[in-house]
Image (cartoon, rainbow, N blue to C red; front, side):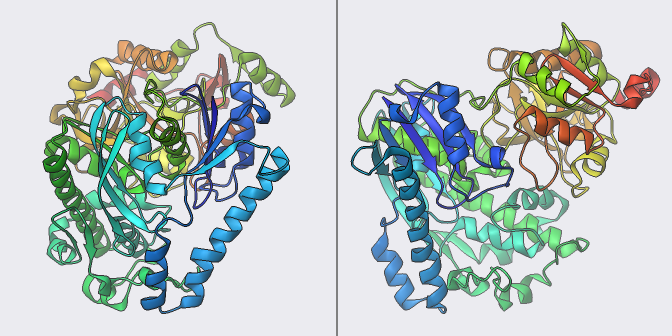
Length: 586
């Protein structure tokens, strides 16, 4: 049985292929069309997934789509009839948009398969079932509490339930406009960032502020009911009025600014109240989700939690769930946002509807395209570039990292999800105190406060970080041990935290090896890891993408397959001295 999973309805369009219950390939369309968070139908991703799986379109038996447009239709119509100030924009967004998306899907379907009667069977899976239950079916747990949190699906914003074997039990939902995702989008706009795009920036800004300054005010805005329902005081917001004019629309009501101060305009400096408001919203989000977790634990008595949806990408929140809830651990898919609903829809169909036994566990995020040395060298020659080939490229890379060089690292199959996990990464030595500022200014071209994450071999986790569980997908923030914060300053945020990735030898041997070799040389088996891209662009997918990014930024070297491309400073052996490096380690 071959299932094509699709997400194309909102953003982060993605395709995946599941063959006999195994995830063979999954790719975000943005990596191929180079439009970050793209909303376009994932035609390129579908073709690439089939290519990886060595399949043809005719081999597809089922298509699972992570949306059911008529789901909760009654609630949507009732809201539109009684609450929306601008009914025209509401109809355009909720119905015209839906019609266009579905028309586009069926046009692709008929062009590909001939007619609706001759092609694979199509299943429209409710959005939140593609989130939490779909994630549960690929989790390592046989029994778990389930939580989906995002801005909005068809109309639901939060979904609570339990998974046991192949069975899913729903406990309750919250519905638009009572949304924790929209709550956080509002503060993202207040901080001068792009909503539904830059929420990670807000999370990174929050530790710069004092949450206590505005916490009591923010606590008044959102509450959790006895069954886990989210309730917002809508007088602070405007998003519920559905006025979808990008030039005029604001998530914030006048009351929001009266209470919290003047919003930051994009490009302006951050004022203290911007950072304090970000800190308060972040803290209250965490507190309210912990309340939901307590309710879920009481209802399920489960040891483990599966969480999905855009809000589950808030790794600071996830870290607090691990530390403070009654659950032993949390499973968050590497693509836990809408991109992962392509996978979730496919597995909800395979396990939940078709009742096939659960055999696959999604612990390997490296399910995208890979390029052989032969393919890479062909491109290097075509571009007429100077390069060298090495028998032990990890030794070469570790030497460069030891010297303080910043390298583009392009190895193996591309990862799925928003975090670079060692296949399409920029790597640096975290021991150098100025490394964060240097990468932000010279390579990523982004805000100076933005933190970078550490990747550590799993055996070294307890030597540097206060985290009892593993974090292979970089979605759980923990504290750096106090005596190690000065050892790895460039991956230690201002509050002493870090968004850790633990690296297993068997999952990505080459990435593990370069970190281990750096540790053998320095005593610190940790690297600074950030995505191989610049701000505003998707992570690189192909060798051409990597070469373009390398030569348009301040990267010192590109390690791609077994090949090294070095800029003039390295070619002339003009590197940071061992004395400077030793000083940095102190």
